[in-house]
Image (cartoon, rainbow, N blue to C red; front, side, top):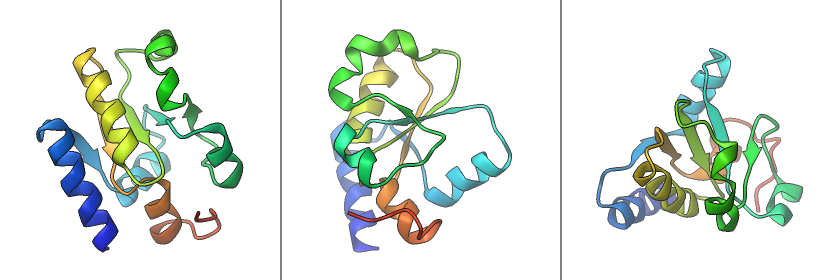
Amino acid sequence: MVNLIFVIIITKILIGGILKSINVQELKNLIDKKSSFVLLDVREDEELKVAKLNICKHIPMGQIADRLNELEIEQPIVVMCHSGVRSARVCHYLHEKGYDVSNLAGGISSWSREVDPSVPQY
């Protein structure tokens, strides 16, 4: 829980409080309802070999600027990483480009702890 609070505080500092964010339970609800959104995983290839959600679109953080054409500006995007810090940076970037983005607070680490313990933690 302390890690999640730390991530939320850092996220707010990094982007000045303009970031929309959702928690893993809210993400699970979106998935269960089959809501229309993209779950964008910005972790590195090696991290996805350890733990991933199969519904994700994967674009590593360092490739976002070069691969914007793969994202539809009209479609809501939930951005995730390991703990929520990298995804917050990507959210800030995409928000400035006009995308409707939300950060997944706590990232896949929180997903593993709170929603699906079969997803390995690292």
